Image (cartoon, rainbow, N blue to C red; front, side):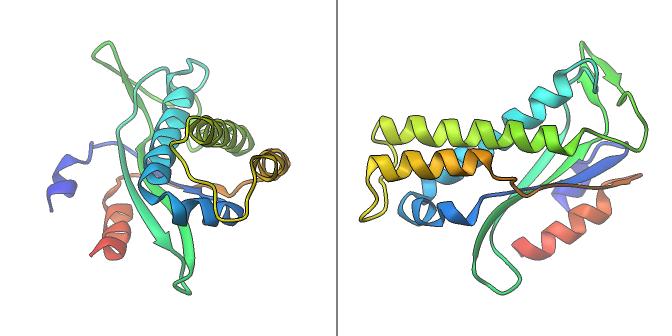
Length: 175
């Protein structure tokens, strides 16, 4: 109920950012740090696209929730985001440049992938993340390079005139 009151009266999109399964070992060894990095990289990716004048030129409203399992109850970390169609810039609401279309999904995926891999790598180098047993630093670098060439699962769902339906859908997961 509290979240419903916070939803802005504008169109919204449902976006999903998925953590690649190849990193599940790192996730299990470093859940708190990996969760923080995942949320930060999703936020930073969204802010980068929303702040670009060619897309919106403003700061979005975002409600994000972490899900750590899939439908079959296996480890599957991903973040669902309810994002406004527009954004706030200097106390003025900025609409998206193209109605019914938010961002080029391939570009969003590449930026998110780059941000997350870079953040994880820096955390590994600083000793903030423990590598899984048996994984050497060279194996981590090889995996990072492999994942940097792979297509990641980032999804922008259809536009909704209001965000309540998405919020109800997401609340079922976290109840």
